[in-house]
Length: 405
Figure 1 (cartoon, rainbow, N blue to C red):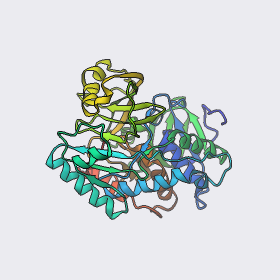
Figure 2: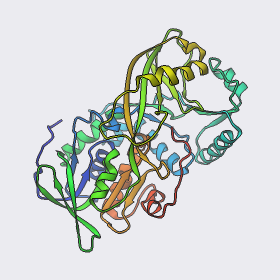
Figure 3: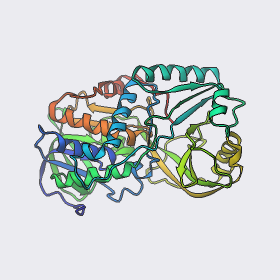
Figure 4: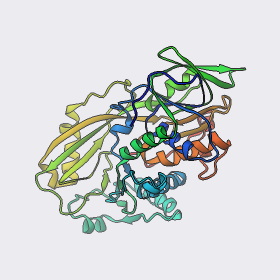
């Protein structure tokens, strides 16, 4: 892959994408794939190492079990995209073949209200062809005898196109192939956005290095910093960084079958990781906004909170050894934990790709495709994402996704 430049080669671009992680790179790639787009694209990324990007720290999973039908359709496209990556990337022989490790997701409900929400979600999913099954505690115990299920009312599981995949490889190939097709990736930072007329359109951006670049359209794909980017254009956005912890552990007594990604009623979740190891994730007890650069681990949360829950749900995990741990960030949409997409209703050439609240990597193929359609045609040609548009934010009209982990 060619080195990332620090200064732009041109003074004007048709599209400037602020943020080069998974959403920015997906949009860039799909623009190059669109036969009706022949414009110039600049991707500006403040940290091209992506060391602390949500993309790099993601657990890289995909699921069909969402409560919002549109989210289900987005994941269905992702599943096809992952399993047919080479054909989606132009049948390039260099591109590896990928697969989904479909161990499934298992939601456990310990109250009638939670069980009812699983039933409602299953109805949404079944209408779109998802093979979700609802299992009683007895049925769960027969299929997975290692769980303690005394408090469980119902479980919801699907083992088709639900599991983990190599999302970072897709990300790398989007960047590589986009560069080969002429997209310019810049190691720099947008520090100002200029508006024209009565503030109804973006005219360009100023970079941290001092250059001013004009543009026809701007895409906000800046992850946890999305609100900061939007504010430069006078736009309010309810997106903030929220810390999430992950651990890899090895059990003294491994399970005799693959462990689905199990979402405990506490919110702690754990799954198969391969080679006799398991992955576990949790949020802080006080889940609020954190600083952009706060990736410190709270070493007490595992011992005092997470591991007791884990060992109670799966008694075989009473003796485990943590082999790796890290903290990452969700770009958390405080309104409804759903994506914010599409153009701004007043600043019409300002486009959103923000607020994915932990399911961004798995939604990136559909999001990049849809945004490229808007930038090229002014409308959607495949999946209509207009329910995710900014108007609901402006109006305070939440479209809550109930299956956020």
